[in-house]
Image (cartoon, rainbow over all chains, first blue to last red; front, side, top):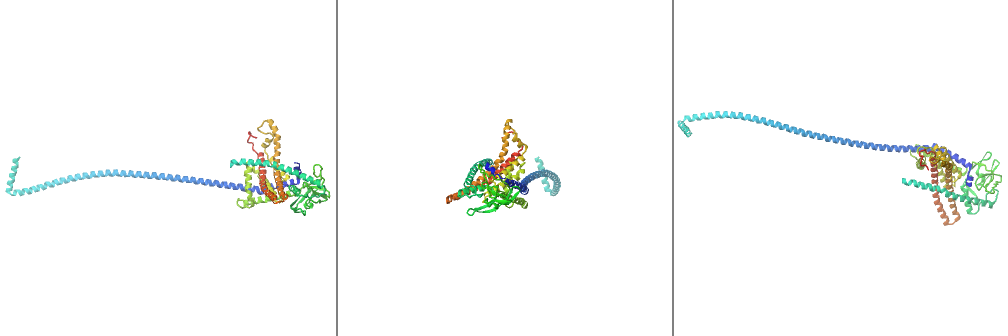
Length: 166
Length: 386
């Protein structure tokens, strides 16, 4: 210990403190402050860059999710629309079918009625024609038959025979 | 890894806390040897008109060299030739306060062999402590019979000694390195460039691993300049000490004393009410205990920086002595086995010393931060205090 105290040198102490304190002050102004500031700034920059990258990533994710959602919605909408269209089509077809059937039936009915009336008319005509034709024929036949006496007698005989038979 | 980190650091811290005890013991032994040797020489040589008689055998020469190395010196000698007594290096200015400023070159001392004259005053360097004493024209230094200390008048010595030169060199190096680093950010768009770039991770490490965990996010900025400066200052001086320049600045008691003193002053001048409350009136313990604890805590205030001072000093001092002793062994063995073995040992030890250089800088900074942290700790844990 005594040797230590003997080693103490005031002049050296003076220089050491002077130089060291001067060094601290000088370095503080010209080195440590700018260095630490620069390092801090850089770290802040890196942090900010990382953060913004993370944010961008999140945004991207959100965007993608949005896109997906929109896509899904669109798909669902398309599906419903298709379904509706299909239903409508089916309904329309069914409606058309029943209407057509009704129309057809109606038309058939009308046709049937027309055919019936035509038939009746035709029958009446035919009857008329047939009666006049048969009268004509009968007239002609009678004229023919009566012109021939033999035949007339025969006919009378025959008629008489028929009456007899009755 | 997270689990591992704390205990590992604790182990290292404990280990380092124990280190100075070991090293200090070594140093004491060495110091005792040194004194003994010096005493022997004095007895053997007597007073040789102030000129120091060179020790003759290799062992005592090495011992003298080591003892000379760990002390501060008034000239910067890189190497010397024992045969011719020539030294290579450069003299440094001597500035003394002795009834006015006495400034002259240390070349006047001729490496302590001659008496320097300035304005009619005579000064000589004592070989045992390397300090300048005022003498008569022949350079007589009278020594106290009991203590062996010179009784001559000592002028206040403001000389630019070897240690001061190395401190200035470290300061200049730091200044240019870190200002260039600071400038490179602006020039290079926020990214460091140049030589200072190597130190940027260390700066960030000190901020994130030393300052913020120990002091807290709220206050750490106030102490960053001091912590960064002290870390690099101690580190650079430790590393300088391992170069062949033969500098021993952080192994100098005065240097570590002034560094520890600054930590002490900053701790106590920036301390808040809570800190002083914990010292004088410890919360959470019975009242009689508070009275007993107060002097202990108060003593702790001084012991903390004292341990800082001794730890750094003893580690570097002991490292230098051990390393130089092993290097000296090479010349004692003078055989190819012994010398190469001690070379290998010295090599391994040098690597260890590099580790110690970093560790001691780390520990000094770490503990300073810890003390600052205690000084500005907020009042938030009433119960459960130690």
